[in-house]
Image 1 (cartoon, helix red, strand yellow):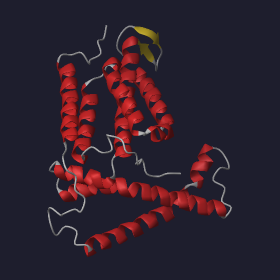
Image 2 (tube, rainbow, N blue to C red):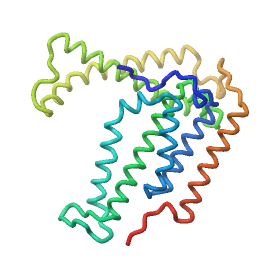
Image 3 (tube, helix red, strand yellow):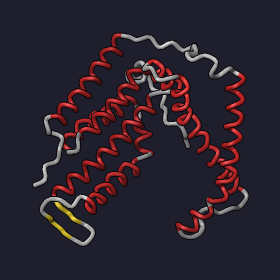
Image 4 (tube, rainbow, N blue to C red):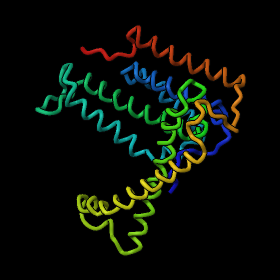
Length: 261
């Protein structure tokens, strides 16, 4: 079972400058934030599907397919409870189903799904080293950028440690699948202790390794990896900036809002 999302694929998106990819991540979040209507969000979804196809990122999306489905379904259902506007098609003590609540809830679910899809696409095409370099070129302090990217580096290691502990306990005869859902959840409690101890040990080893390498001595440390800015990077930067401005214009002129009749 792969624990990293990065997929080594020689696509044009993979070869873009890290700063452009970090900027594109920000712009996609920005664009999704400003609009609520599903029809306004649909072009971004189509764009992400096309980019997933071009970058070979479908295996990661397939692994998370149920998360996308459940995210949209339960978000839509939740807003039928809290967004009680518009003429009711079905009006129950809990559920207020109207055209406005359905469209608004589906739009919110699509928002979250596109934010997740943007993150998956970014992590599928960007290495941690490139993420660090991109943040640094955008003016983020090195320590802050290192702390941000460290989370993406350590989270898979902790997941791998948890899977190793589960497999070791299974080989010793500990059955994690016996009983109902609550009983199964309780059986995973003993796994928390060795995983937590392993995390502390890895954090301590990393702190000693960083100290031995002189981490923090220089505010602008050098890197052996060089990322030159090429013409295709400037073109991609202009296209991404145009998408961000377009979606702000859609918000500004009111085309991305949901009208309540």
